[in-house]
Amino acid sequence: PAIMRTRDDLPPVGTARRHPATGALVCWAVGAVVGVYPYPERGYSAAVTEETLSEPASLDTLPGALLTYRHAEVDINPGTYQGVVQGAILGGHYDPEQGLVLLLSINGADALAGIKAGARHLSMGYEQSPPRAEPGEMDGQAYDVVQHGRRYFEVALLSPDQTPRGGPRCRLLIDRVVDALPPTQGEGMDPAEK
Image (cartoon, rainbow, N blue to C red; front, side, top):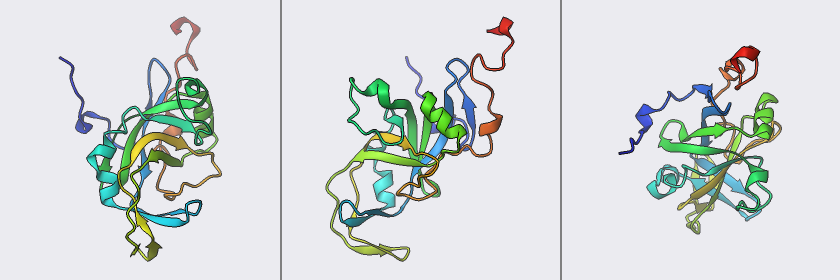
């Protein structure tokens, strides 16, 4: 029988490593946090609540959602997949102190180059149920609607000059170790070891 890994089996949040065979960067990240998110293109601000981020049906859509470098400008389907996908979400959970915590595998050359250039911020791509019209205020910020029923399909690594709608806490958790990561397979190895 297959052995299912639980979140307690995973490496501690904040650690990052290179996959020994593929060279992928495997790291933790925060994809979304509780707060008020502006959606000027939709004409409203939305409350993203603890309930929004902890809904079991939403969390179930995280494993296998795709990682892109910047948001994909095309619908991701079998015909566009190779041109836009840079990695994947391996798993995720809601943590009341950190927010929506993701375990990512990043192996696309564009995303890895972006990280070397300073890219850290993330923006989630999702479909959602129609937001509930429940105006209110959170931490001094007014909102018009409350989000719920998120179904994740993408997390975008933003270019270094972009800040996510959810704010600067939505980011890769690799600052302390990214420069000390072991080289990818083949980099810096003795030719006899390759």
